[in-house]
Length: 367
Image (cartoon, rainbow, N blue to C red; front, side, top):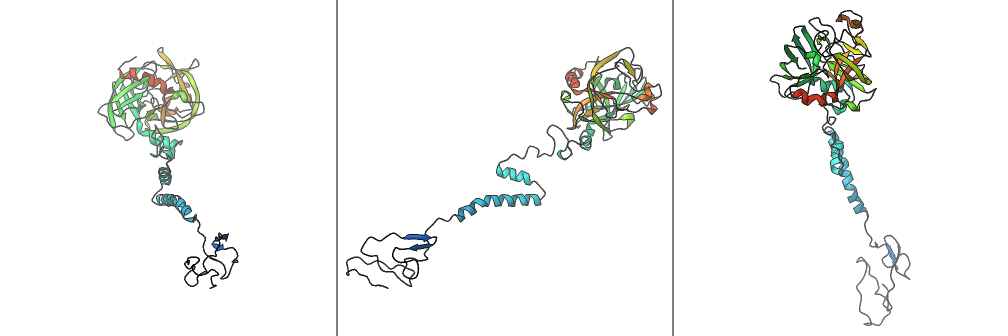
């Protein structure tokens, strides 16, 4: 250690500097110069050189902020989020929901697994199979007995306590009505109201409760080319599903208002198919003198005797029409209904017509 050049006692003694193995001389008589930082972790005093024992604090760390710790803390939520997401995936999915809850995003709009307002599963949306699975429980088979024999048609459950919509011509003149659900359970039914001018009727199942109900859609939103599904009981084949498209809109279809010729609909009593008139021509038999005309949805979904009163459904599982008439080349040619079949010309009453008429039907009016 070098000796001090100042007289003894001129300045107070300074404590030693260093790590305990070596100490440094006290500062000179003049104002000490400020240290020079030469780089991270080193400090050199003027006139003492950059290394060896002559430098002040050579190799001593220079105080500085530690940016690493804040960066590690900032990454922790991301790491935690990833860990939570991976754990959610391992236990059976739901990662998107967990991430949405942690980040504040709304991932719960379709969390129930169904299309809002329908019963079609999200995974089956837009498929015939999905629509059939969702809506088939709401479609029933109707067997009506009258003086003319027994006829078969279809209907749509619209309330949990057993209100069923069908065509007027399916139940017109019936003395008894039996309804069979898709489960095979049967009910007796009574007529609540009819509207022969629109070929609609409302019946009520006796003692029914807790039934699955159909969703009534908006037929004004239909466009030509939209895909549709038809469900009914053609020739008594309960729950038959067919599909096609909307072929045309606002077709003026004329049907008979009263029972009589053609009331049988695939009849086990031997009745002919339900006749209708379009463009001044009659099909499937004589419509008679008492007729009504309505604007219909035309579809190429296969319809056959017994589909009357059943549902025409869009791909969201909503009822957009009540099937009411179909063309059969066999019957128009005068042959029996045994060889009758759909040739892609079917007609349905728009569901908006039904919705506008429901209050009248529920009031018990008949026309």
